[in-house]
Structure formats: C-alpha cells, structure tokens
Image (cartoon, rainbow over all chains, first blue to last red; front, side):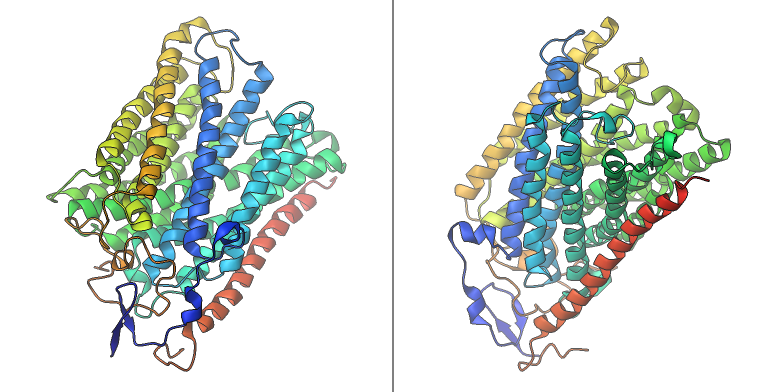
Length: 544
Length: 48
C-alpha cells in the first residue's frame, strides 16, 4: 500500500488532502464557535481549573471555620452552603469537565480521527457549563443564600431552601445535559471514527476507560435528572413523590439518588484508572501487564456499580437480606479493583523505573487511592457503617478516593501530555516541588479525619466538641498548605504555555510512550489525522 | 464496508454520518431512562 508523509509527520494512507480545512480561526470567535477538539479540550481544562480553585476556596473557608470549636468566621447557614457548593463545584465543575477535556484532547489523537465525531454538539456540551455554574453560583446573591441542604439534595431538607433551590435544580439539569452530550460524543468517536485497522483490542486503555465511563454516564445522568425534576415538581407543582403526607416516600429519593450516585463515583474514577494505566507502563519501560484483564476489570467495576447503591443508606433501615446483599456486592468490587492495583504493580515489577512528575503522581495515586479503597471496604461492612455513617471517617474516605485518586490522576495526565499540547517541556523541578507538597499535605489534610470520624465527629457541622480540636487543626493546616501548593501547578502550566525547551514528538524520548498521539508533532498540529494513519505494531498499544 | 483508500469518496464524512445516527439512538436511550424513572415513580406514588 502506498504511503505518504504529511505535515504532521505521520505515515498516512495515500489520500488527497482537503486543504480548505487548514484555516485556524482567530480572536474570540475561535473559542465561542469552537469545533476543534483541541480548542474545546483546552476550554474544558481551563474551566475545570477555575472551578477547582473556586471549590478549593470554599474548602479553605470550611477548614478555617473548623480551626477551633465554636463559630469563628461564618454563620452556620453559610457554612452549609460552603459544604454543598464545594461538592457540586468539585464533582460537576472540576473533576468531570477535566476528564471530558482530556477526552477531547486525547481520544481523537489516540484513535487516529481528525476530530470528535460531532464537533458542533461538542461546542454545545462545553458552553452549557459556564451558564450552569453561573446559575448555581448566582444563588448566593438571592434571598436565603446559596443551596445548603448538601449536594445529595435529600428531601425534605432540600425543599426548605429559598430561591437557591430552583437555580440549583436548573443548574444540575444543564450539567447533566452537558455530560450526556459529551458521553455520546465519546462513544461515537471511539466506535465510529477509529483509524482503519485500529481494532477495539488495540485501543489505548485511556480510550477503553472512557468508553465504559461514557456508557455509565448515559445510564445514570438521566436518573439524576429525573430525581431533581421530581424534587422540583414536589416543591412547585403540588406533587408528592417524596412527601409522605401525599403518599410519597422521602427514602425513595435516596434510592433514586444513589442509583445515580454510586455509578457517578466510578464515573469520577474510571478515567483516572485509564490515565494511570497509560503512564505507569511508559515510565516502567514495559507494556501494561494484563491489558485485556484491565478492560474486563473496568467493565466489571462498571457493572457492579449499579448493584451497590444502598450501602449509602444502611442506617435508613432495611431488611437484613438487603443489608447482606449490598454489603457483599460492595465488597465484591474489591476484586476487579484489586486486579487493577496488582496489574499496575506487576507492570512496574523489574521495570526500568524513572520518576518524572507524571509517574510520581501516578505512584501517589496507586498508594493513596488504595487507602481510600480500604476505608471503603470498612464502610461497606453494614454493622460497622452504623458507627461510621455521617462522620468525618466518610469525609476522609471519599477525599482519599477523589483528591489523591481522581485529582492526582488528572494532574499526572496534565504533566504527561502538557508538552504534547504546548510543544514545550515544563520545569521538572517546579513540578516535582508541586508533587511533594501535594503528596505530603494531602495526607496531613485528610488522614487525621479518619481519627476524628472514628472518635465520633459528625460531618457537615461548623462547630464541634473541644476534644476534636487538635486533629482539626492538623487537618486545617494541611488544607492550607495543600491549597497554596496548587498555585505552583498553575505557574508550571503558564510557564509551559509561554515557552520552554522544545518538546519532541515523542516527548518522553528515553521512556516508552505508546500510541498514535506520540506520532504527531509537539505541539499537536491544529488539524491532525485528516487522513487516517496507518496502524502498525510500533504506533499502537499491543493487544497481547 | 466503506473503501477508505478511495480518493473519490470521503470516508470521514461517511463515518460521521454513521456516528450521527448512533448519537441520536444514544440520546433517545438517555431520554427513555429519564422518562422511565419518572414514570415508575408516578405509578409508585399514586394513592393506593
């Protein structure tokens, strides 16, 4: 077959070029009317970073208030607004958009497609988000303040909010619509836009993780939308889905919410698994151990995530058989998760390891996510959960999973692919300083919360008994340093965008990065793979 | 299967058309989930 060498330095099938596609829009129109997957990916990532800092500022308010027992800086209602909005911003504004941004940037490059399958819908998916979060945050300026009933919005508490209530509900509908459109785009891009010869079992593991995540999103975001629609009609249209006075059931809301909520937890972590599965082989200079097992493990976790939801509700009262079922099914998730942890470890076994910033963050992920997994197993034990429920132990658990898990994986991915995006290498010293400060102080921040929870400190309170003061101060101190150290992340990114040593196409030349994204120049050309690349053993992930 | 080596057809457009059809189906699936969950609750919360 004839080959042609083209502008992006990749072997392509001999094919005529559509030169009219080479224009690059400029000015504000480039971003407002963006259809280029790289531009939209960049917007998602920048948006996510802004939300990360806004949500982080709210966390700082929480930790400042908890520095001492009694009330220090904010009134209790505002404190509740902080915990509620911090969660909504971090989940729907920071972590999910960051993964969608990474999907936008990397999936077309990894599957050899010129762009996402539906570029205009991609534009809508992104631009819905700023409006959604403006609605949510504008509620702080309405009578009664921002939403304060917790991100789970349990009735009847959530229904007692003021004007913030409909704003939050509409914001969540918009976020859901954005997520569903993003997920559809990911699925059809991977299923329909792959380069010829790139079979499913040759796909990079990041694509596999995202493909499974996208199906999860399509299955459960409508459930959340349904739940909040029913809250809205209960509040304004006289229905009583969750109102016992009219024949409804508030516990039913919790079932519906967590039927969405537990798969949502895996939506937040499966792409992180994909990222770590890309980075560890590169810096171990070995292929990923158990490629197919990793895919099956991811799919198993996704399936199991649908049959564990009531472990969030053990204390609502349920039949013993129900408790047993949800306890056992939850513990079963440890099996495929264990497969993953052992496969990452085995990938490193006898590898030629180096510790660049992406690898450091991936290793921290491996250790700290596993701690979060173990505390999750403790929470899965129904009788033990009666003690842990609604304590700081739960807060410690999910922050280990989501901060030192999901957020660390996002940072690993940014440090891994940033030179591919910008064409420059970044300051390794500064990035490693960022890593060490983050890795140490994330533990100072969250580990003491295990002790506080086991000793009985409830979550979501601005005040506490004096015996909890010491560990709260340690936790707050850890929080302030962790928060401040994230400024280094921004400095590294800005420096890297503005300049720096030229990055090669392969970026990590002395390691073994695999995949089509490393066959295009750095920075990746504005239009890549306009003609499908030729798939060879060298430029794809081995299928074993 | 589309002949992707042909210079007379545009294989990317053909794949996009298929992707659009699949996207509509997935969108309808999401809508069906949404309506099903509310529908089941409507039935569940009617006075017995």
